[in-house]
Length: 321
Image (cartoon, rainbow, N blue to C red; front, side, top):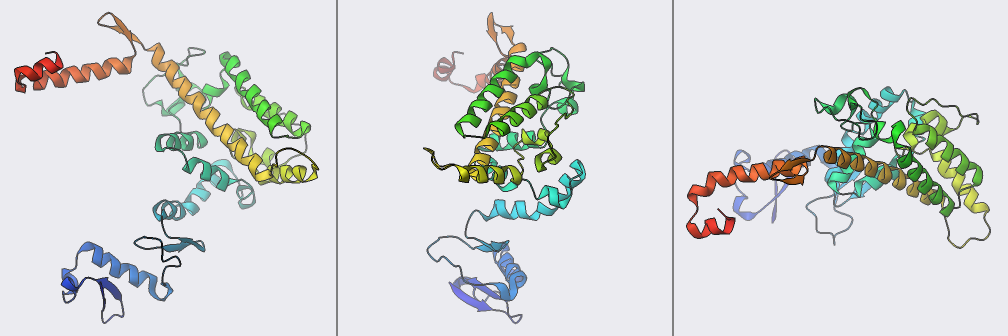
């Protein structure tokens, strides 16, 4: 590769074969290279880590990114707009929105598979396919058998006829808090507010002094939006413990609770979807099967009928035609 310099003092790295071509004859990648040099200007520099094989690297928020920069650029470019959207939606001020452990939530979600990451994000923002977002699907709640068109987005968690499911989640959460050596008073408060969040048309009746999480909302707590104040509370508590077998930290406590809230509630959503599929099971060729399976068989039959005339006799035997 050879460095070629234009009259505009713009540097471009090109191969010898195109060294003397006019700028108008350059391909898209080469023109983008010129545009990037113009934008970067004097702030460009050599990569810090030469051993990393990457086309280029960049700084975002004073952090060096030699790879995986696409997602970071995407999230950074929409960060201010997303912040203003959340402030307007929940009536949060700058101080309150900064009091939430966003980095822990986003870090956990980003490590999931694409499908799970998409579902967790929708759950966090109340964008699940329920309530007004059903778009003429007319889904029926598998617990109370009412149409979800006019029910709350979180009805799959709060339905009065799903008490057994609620009790199971609460019991598992209580066991988790015990394993994390959470203070008894805090454990009692968390279990109380979780039960309240699981009630339909619930209203906060907390008599404890207002905390950051009270102001943020406990309905956000079940979405993994935990206040930094809780993290600091657990940090200070763990530091007072002189002896314990496993070394806990406030950050670790918050990460574990965020993981529980997102995984358990997304699992509950998937369980709700499975129940809806089961309720739509039908009889096809004297066999009991789910609706989506029957739809797949019909699609396969349709395409087989289209290609049947194009198959040789031996090929037809393979497909049982």
